[in-house]
Image 1 (cartoon, helix red, strand yellow):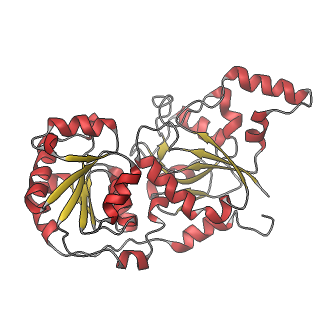
Image 2 (cartoon, rainbow, N blue to C red):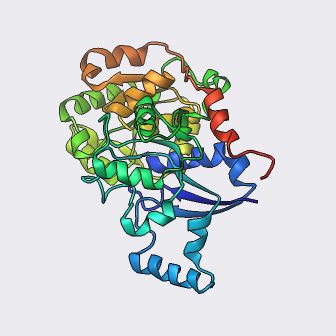
Image 3 (cartoon, rainbow, N blue to C red):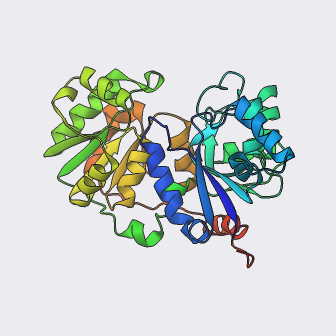
Length: 338
């Protein structure tokens, strides 16, 4: 038995897309997670205060048990998915992955599992290099979800494998062939309400085109910002909403439904549940997934000229996975000593 710490990126996250990634990781890593002893901590909150860490060292010196010791001495520590690596770490110190000098020992020797970057910069700042050199394992190769993240991790002297995002791992050729190629009668759409990701003109045009081409239209709300933004768009306030991942799965499995929208993992989840999906690309993440994994995308600036014709056309879902890369990463933790 191995002692595993799973740093859960869905805990304390305000973005349900992180739940989609974690569900996929739990499924794809079940042969490892289910055969060992696992505990979970969050990445989006500070797990232990400086006082707690200091107290744990005192107890260990006195040869007394301590909860923190488990997390410090675990055999494997996995950082599970989402865009956590911040190239400009000094500016991002209090967002997403809460690493502080006081809790570095909790993260020491951790392994990335399908992790991407916050931005598109090709270099770390000095604080970023220091932090990630302190916490990332030198023993194991790291699973990253795009070539940019691979280059960044390799710049630290670590080995990285581009496995793609674990949310794509279930989309084998067999499952992709089961996804319809023709337009459905109904649609679930999404918009991204984070201010840097908003584009009222093109998003309003997307809603207009979708409402014109589908009989019933509902909206997947992935963050609370999505709903407030939707209500400000023409025609948005009239649309029915889906909030929980459970209800979203049920709606997708009703059948005869397409997904079109800017929420990347909302579209990936739709494909996992057998629905034809078109992700409207708004940043480097979808573009990277498209280049590496052939994710079906449409750039947002293309909405006025191309969205309607793409919706009405036939297109297959042909996600490209590097099965050898995934197997290589997992094989590090699948030895006979488990």
